Length: 268
Image (tube, rainbow, N blue to C red; front, side, top):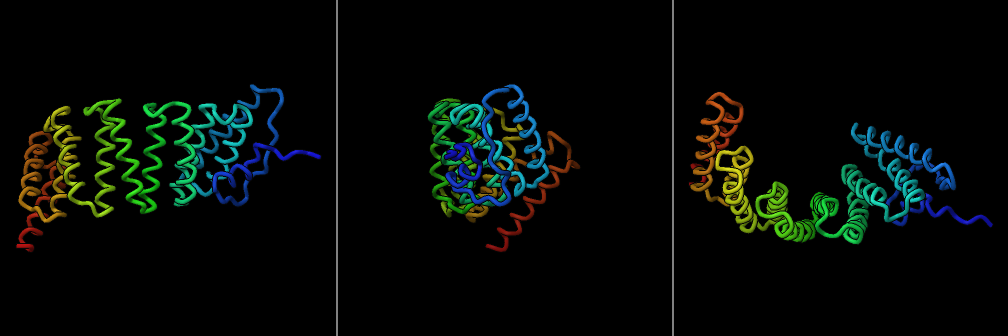
């Protein structure tokens, strides 16, 4: 009796909670010719990336499952390339809006990254961010916030307050809290982010200007128009100094300021 192929992509997809249609039939792991098999794997990877980059994620997903299955057959489940391909599969499922499947795959991927690389490895950070993003996209905001909060704590410990990805993670958490209806907490995070970026990047850095704009918009959403207007005025002055009055960014900031002033006047 012939045993089932342990690297059959249909079985792997089922184990990961993925529903596939028209998947390529499973292949047998080659017993020899490893170099040729790896070359074939690389070609398959390039083809899959090309399809994904064109935005055809429904086509890319089964290709990625096949690629993952082949990589597992050649290199094993715990090889870094296999683990990376699983994480990419989760991201593709997110882009395809197959969010429940994406979350299931990304939870598995994160567990693998933690076990193999540890919680402070860049690949683990990426997997954790991908999981949080998928949860937020699925409107599972409280779960997403928990993942982002854990991620932020680890980034602060491992990378420090001034690291660019620390800023990005805190901003992502603030967005998630806004969507969860936890506006006061979100505003406080935006405020902390602005203070940190001002300290580490400077008050007129473009990233700091963006953070100030985000805080102003969050405050306006909380009807704190006075502080929101002051922040937009500060941004307008900084952008005008840096780029001149006719710059597109200056015009956008001016328009944002006018809109909030009008909203404040209507709210009075």
